[in-house]
Amino acid sequence: MKIEDFFKLYDVYEEFLPGQLVGSRLSSEEMRNLFTYVGDRDPKFTGGIINTFKVHNFDLTVSAAFSFKQTVMRSPSYRGMEIDRGRNYTRDIYEAGGSLPAITGSEMESNPGWMGNKWLRDNPSNAYGLLDVWAKEISYLRISSIRLGYTLPKEFTSPMGIAV
Image 1 (tube, rainbow, N blue to C red):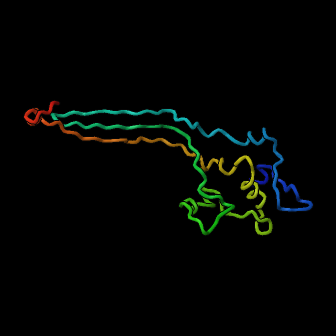
Image 2 (image 1 turned 30 degrees about the vertical axis):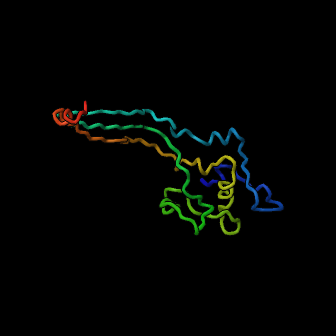
Image 3 (image 1 turned 60 degrees about the vertical axis):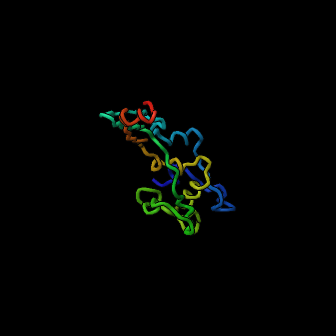
């Protein structure tokens, strides 16, 4: 389905200034109904653990934090209708037109899809940033710190006046 049909787009000034302003015939409620629930920004499970293992005079302390099943929205790494060859982009640009939105233009003369591109660039609902390709479900386990310690025996510390 073309974006023009999906958002019911039209050229507002078609009669006297074509290609300048794009509008949608959808009401606010109809626009909200186009979006579907992709997940919760709060993780389903989150927590952490700190544990110390002691063997003789050695101790090993491990600290970890985890988060499972959290939905995050990436910031779009490029805007397909406003590519500037003088800027640096992430490697996402190589997937443009494949799994990510294509690179196009918003000029009416050179692009049959100009209306959709212009609307994605200028609309107040930020539909481009809310596309489901930017939503990802993440889970992670992060090891915050690993510490290895050794406790000196009392026969070495006592003569120096150090108490353990």
